[in-house]
Image 1 (cartoon, one colour):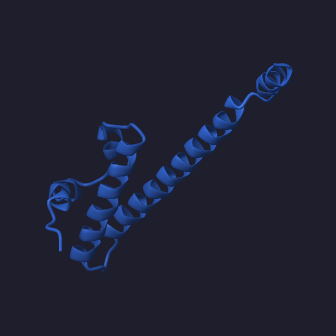
Image 2 (tube, helix red, strand yellow):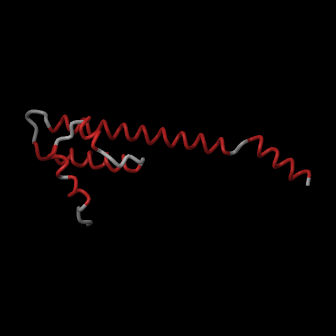
Image 3 (cartoon, one colour):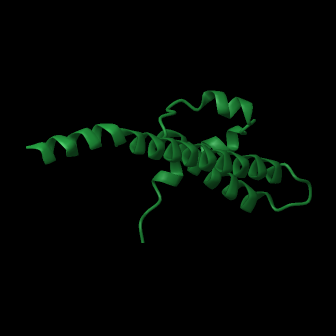
Length: 108
C-alpha cells in the first residue's frame, strides 16, 4: 500500500493537468496565428481586386476563395458572426455574393 500511496503523492506533486494547460495554450496560439495569416490573405486579395490593370475575374475568384476560407476558419474557432470583419476589412459585396456557390461546388 505504501508504494501506491507514494505513487499517488508523486502524481499530485507533478500536477499532470499543467501539461494539458500548456498544450491548450499552444493550440490556442496556433489557432490565433493561423487566423491572422488567413486575414492577411483576405487583405491581400481585396487589395488585388481593386488594383488597376489586373484581370478582374481571376482576382474576384481568388478573393471569394480566401474570404470563404477565412470565414470557415473563424467559425472553427468559435466566431459565428462575420459582420464586423466584413466592415473592418472592407470586403466588397461582389465577393460576398459568390460565397454561397463555394460551398455548393460539385465534387469530382
